[in-house]
Image (cartoon, rainbow, N blue to C red; front, side, top):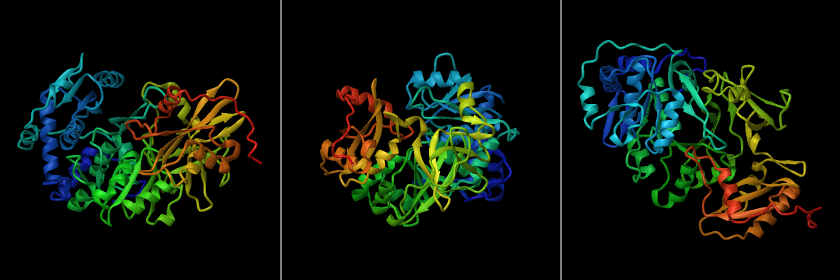
Length: 500
């Protein structure tokens, strides 16, 4: 379900009321053995909001939410929004120290949680009992305040792989404009709502009057869930999509009508071909970010279509490729990506330096390198910060990764630098081999050198699995630490006599 990118902004609360009024029996949230209609969803949110009000929660405050159950979490989130309060996810899978730090950064004064063990020092605790949903469903709610589109709804955060995560405040109006250009459909996120991309899917569904599915027990095969629940699109992180490839022989393909949308890190053309060969009949490739939602999108339905492109920018979204001075570059040239989109965030919370760096002159600069094809499709070449400089030669990790991904024994690869006092940054590649495949580090290094010459990795290390963070992105800092722990040293970089 899509709407025009310039659809008027609203709030999640008034959209919920509208859908409950116009389509009361339409499914809002589904799971195996359970369907919650928009009428029932509205009653749950109203009852929860009334109960939260009796706990002293007021409009304008920020409340932490530590609830792993999808339905209870979204009901509490919208109950808080109905009071004019913002919420922040303090994920139950995060350690107490991380939850306390995030709560302090956003100014949360209390936490709503399902378990007593999720109390946080210095914060008021609002416990939710096991029968809360049934209680809220039967509670007669008093008049509720509908928030303004300019009021804060929640917070998203960046992955924080190179330091403390940046926090992005999001208003009702911003998330509504982002949802308007997204492909929402009848979606199944493979992670719980405590993960940012899944939370976004639940909010998008309410805004667009769509249906979102709760995965429930992790052991249930995804293909079975899709068939049972009539899923249009499965949303997941790249590492989860890789698990689907590995598990395809046991679990089977997704239904023909189900599209897979992996996100979180660059998906190579080979990765897309593997998905189409073993997992699904169509993949939706998106370029999106927490600061502004989806920027570009394309759908690929055959292995022949699989490319490195992420599609054309959405209607109403402007994307430019610029040089170091901010001058737009012609098609085919690689430069820095900048974005201007409806619903885009205006900055980071209490981080003037990061805001000034990434939000400039009405543009958002994500720090990615990109180029446009002759057809107007965007190709993302990786992070500008990840570019290595070896003896004055600039080398993007994606250059190395794209070559090594073509080797038949390679399942996944990530390039990263080891620092040398003489040569600058020496490129190294960490390689994850395909199941049952064999290849030596020397063989892989030679394979890369034949294609890349002086830009090839000087070292290759074979790993069992590439490390990733909670957002599914490769953790290059950990890779560098692994390299050091294996006593991999940059060493002297000499001319290779085998090169022309």
